[in-house]
Image (cartoon, rainbow, N blue to C red; front, side, top):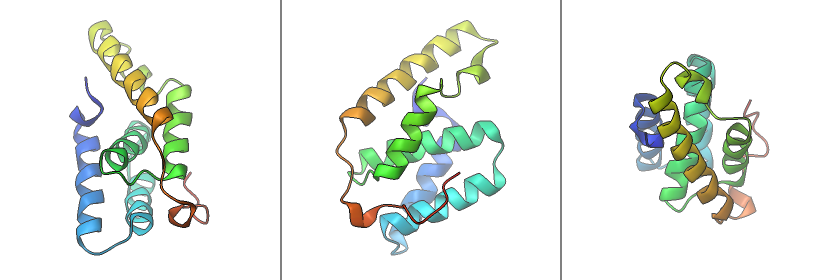
Length: 123
């Protein structure tokens, strides 16, 4: 199961791209995306949204250090594997996808400091 196969992850990517197309900077797009998902999503969707935001930013060459670090923190804590505990095959597939994302994020080069979200509470 790839990270972006989740409906919520696809929604995050669509929102991120929509905000960028509307003229927002990556920082502004991140703030808007995070504000929505942290405020309105359930716990599982919040985890998925951080992972999806990091994945889409990395894919777009606009990975922000704060987003990467938050996603790595989630991945280091096991990601959303508990969500898949009732299906061993799905859980293993998800673990493979999470491990691959962690490896990619650890090797990714984040954007310059001026695009960081340091002044935003991303909890």
